[in-house]
Length: 475
Ligand SMILES: *[C@@H]1O[C@H](CO)[C@@H](O)[C@H](O)[C@H]1NC(C)=O
Ligand SMILES: *[C@@H]1O[C@H](CO)[C@@H](O)[C@H](O)[C@H]1NC(C)=O
Ligand SMILES: *[C@@H]1O[C@H](CO)[C@@H](O)[C@H](O)[C@H]1NC(C)=O
Ligand SMILES: *[C@@H]1O[C@H](CO)[C@@H](O)[C@H](O)[C@H]1NC(C)=O
Ligand SMILES: *[C@@H]1O[C@H](CO)[C@@H](O)[C@H](O)[C@H]1NC(C)=O
Ligand SMILES: [Zn+2]
Image 1 (tube, protein in one colour):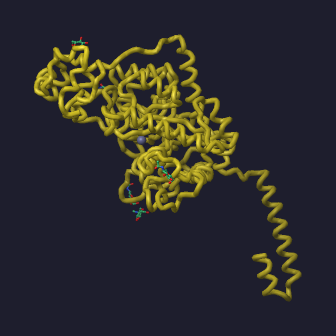
Image 2 (cartoon, helix red, strand yellow):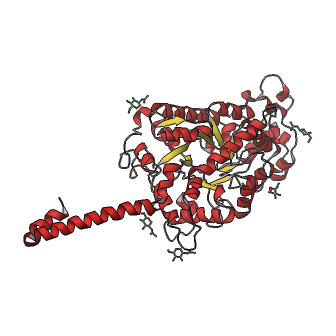
Image 3 (cartoon, helix red, strand yellow):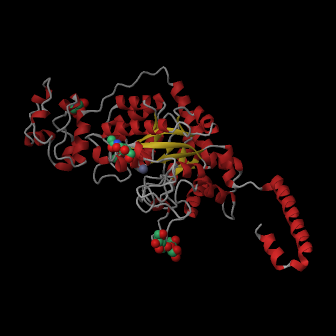
């Protein structure tokens, strides 16, 4: 039907001649196509059939929390939610994910992020993090035909070959650890495989990308211990969100490769969330990976135009040109931000990016199928395997038993602007806060002992067996 019947209607006199002509051209077209197929019909997206596309960062679980209070019965993952009146783009500016679009996007592996906002730091961050780990685990269990929990590098590819999205759990923000190595280890036991050392707030042991005025933690001794313990247990260290100096400090001491789960290139767009060139060189030396973030605000610094897919291409190519194709990956940040570039509007669009890279335009590096497979997922799998190998090589090391000092906690809470540091804490470290601290005196001009006196606290009382904080107001 269609074209040939129109010809038949309007050209009855030459009907036979035309039908023969149409028939011949179709025949030639079919021959042409099959010859073409055997020569080169490879498109960049086809690399996603021979290697899993692994995205380093998706915040859908946070949307479960703030939209549904984690009631998954009310979420229709299997439906196309593009125009949904809760999850559609007109209703929710940070909603980009559902199963049909993940499938169209050829996603083979995904880190689902257990994120809790910085406001929870020193309060209920641990409880909120545990709730997010629980909702991710329930989400994965709810769709056994489509998702499978993966906690080992070797299971990513087999899960993907079985037609399921290899679903991994991440924690975004060291505040979820509450400065405790015990929590770090238990999160690992619950299936978490990377921890981003900070979100947008400093922790008592590492600076976030926006370093507070005046006081720099960098990576403290306790922070180094956190990294060493992550290396020992096989938890990937994620350096997205930390300050540029913390990136440098961690790369100087880590015993395993690191990841940036969702960060782009600073020299392409000078946003502090992006990775500067000197750090990219260190990532190459470390055998790590930068998984490129798509967020419009990180990939395009020109406010007089909108971000496009081309901007993401530029970031990927910059990293590749500088440190090679083995150290770049994908970390879209879908559902964690409210603006995505034109051409990468939701999780269905990854294949377009791979097609575009394979156009191999003038002035751009040449992408082979193998290169695209590395970008998609093979680089990440290599890093994950290397982290597991370091874990195995350290199996004779004992768990670290370090506890952060009360002073560090006290100063950190002051810096975060808590009026009443320690007011809500009963842990025994708080009974060891020293009477003076250089850093504290420098910034506030007050001795800790003086502040405590003003707060109505008695330093001698603090060493008493029972917590002395509870009788003080404010909690
Ligand atoms: C969860 O959502 C479902 C579907 O909308 C609803 O029927 C149910 O009452 C909700 N459960 C809770 C505890 O809110
Ligand atoms: C912070 O770390 C950077 C990079 O390692 C280092 O150059 C700098 O001196 C450190 N600053 C402080 C205050 O420790
Ligand atoms: C920013 O975008 C505008 C509009 O596309 C363009 O004219 C201008 O040259 C760009 N500026 C820079 C610094 O790239
Ligand atoms: C950017 O995109 C928005 C939304 O699609 C549109 O309204 C606006 O005109 C665009 N701005 C520019 C400078 O193209
Ligand atoms: C208290 O200060 C002293 C002297 O600076 C130091 O040796 C000690 O480790 C500090 N104690 C704590 C708990 O930070
Ligand atoms: Zn983030």
